[in-house]
Length: 211
Length: 277
Image 1 (tube, rainbow over the protein chains, first blue to last red):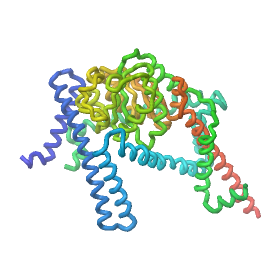
Image 2: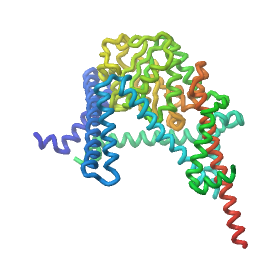
Image 3: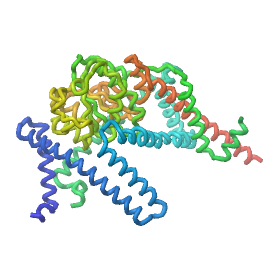
């Protein structure tokens, strides 16, 4: 029994059956298929919860290894990470949602720090723009012009400087940007369909984790 | 003053000097708001009209799917839209498919004027459900299968509003706080024909354009879209301040492009001059 469950064929057949039921539910309004598909979706949410627990376990395990081995230049970061993880975890378990110590740690420590780290990207962007957006050829001229138009269009002041800027930006978005994005969306949809077909037919090994 | 700047530039190097200049210029409108007029975007107007067209008592879903790092920009549009939903006496069922969004949505509901709306009767915050797109699919087919309790631990069968909603067919609109509109188009708009309004950061608006106006009926993009929406609902707030900062930062970036090209021309001239010598 164990050999059957561990075999690649079992994983392939299971994937095919579950995928087939989910697809059938979309096209055929049959009560039994809807009930089974609905149950499978609930199981997907439960499995997703377990992947979070699994991911957290591996993260803590990795950091504890760094601390235990006193890896030079890294072990104190691991210690900080484990300390604050434990603090947030315990405050979430013991405290109430939306108030108390957990809310304080989340809203007044975690959120501002996370936002500040992300916000500093603009400083690197400004420096990179100074160095890279230089007109050295026709292509780079087109790039610089496009960048200036997009920046002016996104700045609320652009529309006030010249009323034609929103129209130009709208034209670029509608006829260039949208066309390209829609083509990419259709292409990725077809690729997703092919990948799904290959996965359900058992031809794609990556989804099975190398089984 | 110029000599001091040159000294600082030589000491700290160009990248840090530009960063310092950026921080200096961005701080000015925060301390002294300029009040540059805001032009309301067409997509924000479309979102406003979509909410206005719903009769009072209609149920609207709000799905939180924005990373914490991007929240401050998306919060402007989120707060404005939720305030608008309350002012139109629409019923709201909110949830999060990223862990941090549950707490963030709680903060929005705490601070937004609710026009006598009662928790459990007129609005509910359900909390986080893992799985992203599969969670959306589960909620769309049976909301009770995804949630046993709300964000505050109340069993959902004790909340009167939850007895009125079972699946996506009970909703008139879904507000997606997200950079991935394709999830909502695939799981809500396409199978159940529920119109989608997007709320995202400025950079995330591009992902919505292919779906406007058929699948996504409106978009509140970034602080600019949020500020426009605030003006539409008559509640100017943080969005107006944010557009001042946005103006200054984008003008600074444009200045960086122009300054970079001037610097390149001057360097070339200097090189030619030294070659002639």
